Image (cartoon, rainbow, N blue to C red; front, side, top):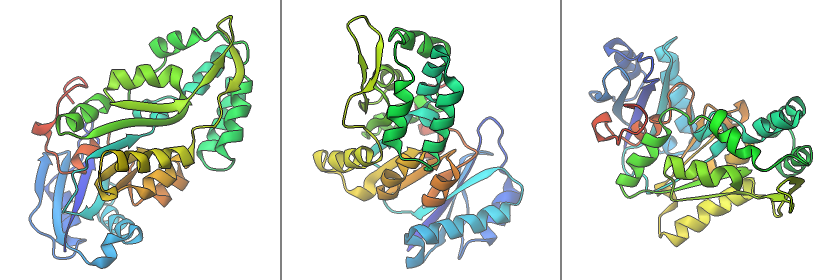
Length: 308
């Protein structure tokens, strides 16, 4: 069976050269001549794999071996079968994945409780505490905050992750269905999903009183780990897409289930527990790494992020 190892560096600091590619080739079984997807930034190396490399542990082990061969070069390595690598459904987390911030932490700053909320967020994202009770506890600390603050948070503090709009625009051009799934809030996701270009979005709903202030409550049931996985399953059925034709990206503990269920599940600049659980991870590249991982060349990108 033919497999491919994709080497990807950060487009803002290209780190791949012929010598690095040669070292990677020597770490792979029966490696073929490399193919540049974007010179200096991303390359494919096809190789003869075995049944072992179809399993998550096998992919991780071989990717780790290639990373070790690259030594101190800051590059990501993804290993997967060559066949079927271009996906038809993309699900992504929002906070610290498609955007660089945690929205609830930014809201908490306006309420004067950011240290308390951020500490709970960090523990929940690492999987040290259950997501749903942690979310209720954090939302309770926001009681009385004007919902209109969301407008200022989005305008002043929320920044898209580099490559976000290019990723989604390129996928949509290639008939991929896209959905933003997050344990965050619809007050943010409805607008952020539209800016990035997602087909749809799913999130939690903050309850607002008649005076336009947060009540400190979130509508039940909580949209978290199980709901993200259920959304992946629902969309594969609704769109008649095979599970192996799905792509998922996330960084926190409540993303693990959907990452592991996807055809290509990627831990994106993720917490250690998530990176360990995923068959693939991106530690250095921006979100365009998810295009290179599917074999897209840079000339195929729909450039929406300042030329990248």
